[in-house]
Amino acid sequence: MINQDTEFLGIDKDSGFSLRVLILSVPAGLIFLILALFDILSPFLAAFSYICILFFNTVFLMPISVEIQQVKKYIQSLSSGATEENLLKNMTEKETRDLTEAINSMHKFWIDKAEMLENRTLSDAAVLDTLPDPLVMINQSGIVIGANLAARRLFSADLNNKAFGPLVGDAKFDAALKQILEQKIRHQDLNVCLPLLKNKPKFYVRLSILPWFAKGEVVAVSAFYDLNKALKFEQMQQDFVANASHELRTPLSIISGFVETLQTSAKDDEKAREKFLKVMGEQAAYMSALVENLLSLSKIELTVNTLPDEKVNLNAVIREIKNALELKIKEQHLVFATHFARLPQIIADSAQITQVLQNLMDNAVKYASPETTVSVSTAKVEAIPPHRYYDVADGGAVEICIANEGVTIAPADLERLTERFYRLQQHKNKNIKGTGLGLSIAAQIIKRHKGNMLITSENGLTTFKVYLPLNLGA
Image (cartoon, rainbow, N blue to C red; front, top):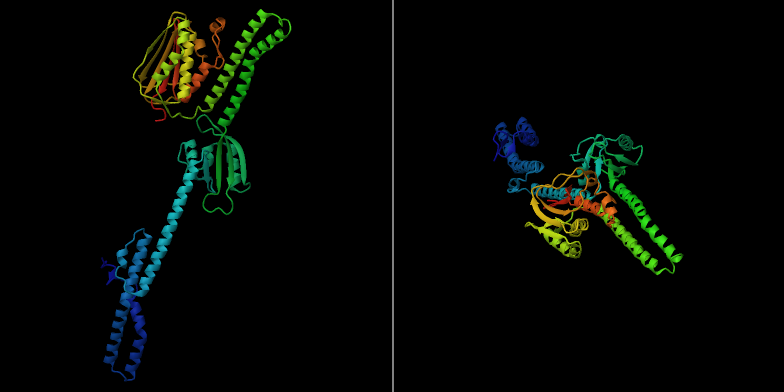
């Protein structure tokens, strides 16, 4: 539709069309004026002829001017993101048709180019988000221009358009970043503790300036590598060596002493040989169990931050363990009582959950007084009781209760039951074999599953309650 306020016959009023017609007609008008001055042509005929020239020039320029106006509007619509192709339907002039085709070709080229660049940008962003280590991009002013998913999770904030130095909160980092942005150095490696974040994690940070051929606003990048896992693994190795050497020293000494005795003074003593070989076998079995438990504990601690994804039927697992313990139950004349609630399958690590229940149920049988009752029950609960040192899973959970009748465990001892190598003195006095790692292993597995374990002991009744989430990771 033509806007009557700004257009006339499809031409903008301020386009200068009338002026162009007049200027084009000036030469003919001068000729007619001269002819009229020299009486070669009558003034009337000269004026009429000039009017005819004006008319023919107007008729000649009108179509191309109108179409140029339509092309102008079409270009304006393209620049605003619209495509009013109906403006080009009635093109009749070859020049304007060619011009329109050239404009459309150029427009399609730039649309394809922009789409390709957008796809590449999205692809690059997706690649950066898959990187496990935080990566932050910084401009010349030290402002964050972009960050990958790991960085956004680390700082738990929208980093874009914020000064990066204060977010890190470390003086050494600020000084290094300033030198990088001033291009005094090209790279800087440093260990940084992030005091503004929870638990003040420690990172190895690499600051780098981009090469000279890099285009865009980003001038530097900062990559973070988590040192906590490496430090924890190193500490685990040290603990493993220290614990293993300490716990293996005694049985090795016993075996070494007996071997020496059998080679010398008891060389021909049949009774001594039989007795010593039995003790040596027990000590060798103890060392084997100890090494196996230490390796199991180290493996569990390495996977403590990895969520399991298997489906486990807890009632079925408990039944299988009970069947395996039948011989021990009969030897101690125990009553083994079970009560199973209807439970759905839970998401867990089947082997590790079996290991937890095996340890707890075996301990219940081992440490129970003869001719007493060991009970195991399962139930659904609305929530997992909170733990003092880590976050438990939200939502409904399963409770496994394992109880036996034996010695009453003092509150001070209850606090230490899950420590490595800690064993009750009463059990040592009764010469009950064990490595002191079973409950520590169970605690680590339960932690991995975001569950909890509560231990109580009153009037000789000791109860272990294990809580595991119904929907781990949901």
